[in-house]
Image 1 (cartoon, rainbow over the protein chains, first blue to last red):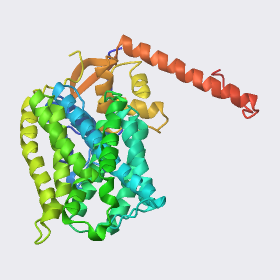
Image 2: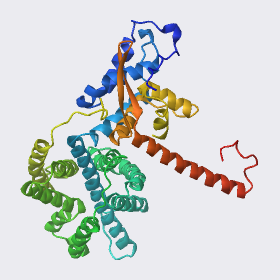
Image 3: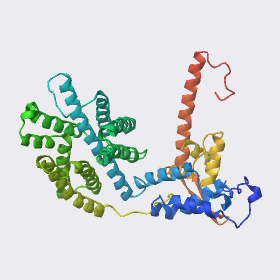
Image 4: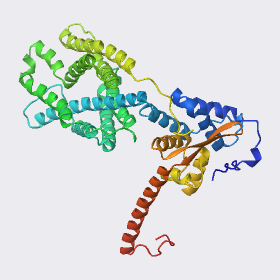
Length: 345
Length: 108
């Protein structure tokens, strides 16, 4: 039953004692550095031994390196260990990533809803909105974002993943020509890809399934619709004669401004009420993404103070909440615990 | 997971031993990467389905052997029964459709 395993005999001609494959081992150990130090302390030697046994004796001459598949499997393991492996700290980071995914999806859902309402208003001839061009193709992305957000919130994270990936793909395709790869493209692409990457990484097989209440889903939806309804009279004004403050207002009534205010207010509440570190860190990340998103429109332009000043104020508000959220969130994280390979030893 | 548990039924095995056994059991279809193997082992150990059996040093390197726990054996048994039921359902429907000319040798 417990007889020792016979040594593998696949490479009998090379079964010599001393010359271990130095280069391959060094390169594999380098790949293992993707794993947290506490995990490596337990597992590194064992993994190196298994890897070298699998590779057979390889001389350094051909410059051997681990296959990409092996490195990818270590990277996947690293994501899994960091976001929900053993220990409260990893679990808190995992929760942070999941919240970032949900916040990012909420943002995209708000933007999607906004543009869908515009599209519907335009299609029915109710409104004509110069400067806001929506294509039918964009509507596909809008619907996909809304579906992905609702699905992820209700705990259907499996189906939410391909939907969100599709939404991001369509959004990125549309983004490419419209911004002509200016420096606003980077934050916009980040805003599209970050929630999807967080969704894919955070909701892994062992992640706890949380079904969030419908009111949390309806909150961003209602906020977007209310702000739109409240500002409808503004958009009905003939734009040619609209006074300048109306332009300034129109900057503030976009859903990204609503999201910015909501994020800053929630951040302040999180700080006051002592929310969990994962919530603080997720809000800090969301606020940073929003800041990057807003920053291009906050650049001072002579003669256009009414356009950039509101954006700059929003950026300032975000910057004020980001730092305390990030600092307190990091400090309050549970201490790292050593990962254990198994219960018995 | 299923194959990794199966690989530990007859005797405790170390990391690479599990990789080899899984490959053999799957007829060469499943070739576990080391990172994936330890992901699976972490999960199985976390659920109490496998545990550390012993440590050995072979050619100057650490080998940890893992064994199936009683819980692990029970879970594997349940999973095997479930898969067998699925397979049996598929077979009987195929037979009803006249699509299974030669009943595959003796497992039913």
